[in-house]
Image (cartoon, rainbow, N blue to C red; front, side, top):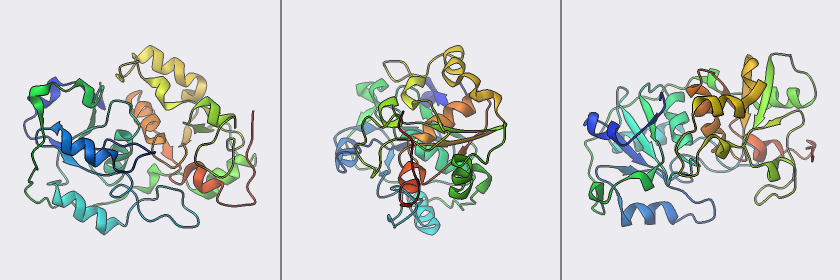
Length: 273
């Protein structure tokens, strides 16, 4: 596997920088509490809301990127350099590890991986509840805007101004895509012309990545398009789909603000189906 690594990878790479990003959208204290209770020895903790996102504004979605120098300083504080090899894990639900994977790739790191199956795959003897210390790193962040789809592009696509080579992928559950439920955002439904590929459908019941044949079937004819734009509710779980697409050798672009940004403009309509 290209982006997902099993437990043996830790033993084979003693120079790994390991980052815990466990997260619960409904409980802001869950991640740090879980980390303090038990984490992989040597792992740092980054909070999705506080470290991997900046202040929420009128537009830009619920998880905009943090200010670049603040993020850079945070990554340096946990020992990250531009040539670091990084392994990320969440609870194994694949809901947050992809966000950091995408961010580190976006800012120029090459060797970034996610623990296949997440925290629950860790053996007890590998865990610690001790406070970790890190030698300060010297990473310099260099964003690659080719990895992002803009609001203007998505708006044009939703209005039917698209080419045959372009597709917009909604990474949320089918119920949210169809507008049956919406637990967070101000409107129900999906961006017009988007297709639905729920990010969790890429994984087995234990959180491990499905086989390549199943993944290709999951994305169906989406892989035939040249320009793939991907969104979710706020630009977090869409990154998981992007990571899986990369696993299949298919580049794609993140609409960072995602649905929460799109519906922040009152004039934008969404579709229920």
